[in-house]
Length: 55
Image 1 (tube, rainbow, N blue to C red):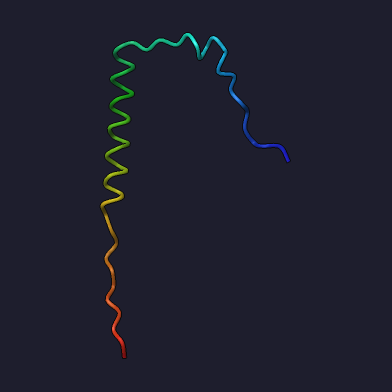
Image 2 (image 1 turned 180 degrees about the vertical axis):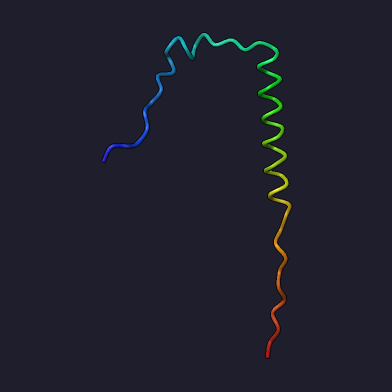
């Protein structure tokens, strides 16, 4: 069975010669900060634990 994805040729000039301007870097940075904050909040929120009582 073949994998369901296509390998990307990273030697392609589209990938090698990419330059990012300042606005692109700010946008990427903002997205990463938002993503980091979401992961941190998810880790810190623990579900309430129920106390088990023996009968």
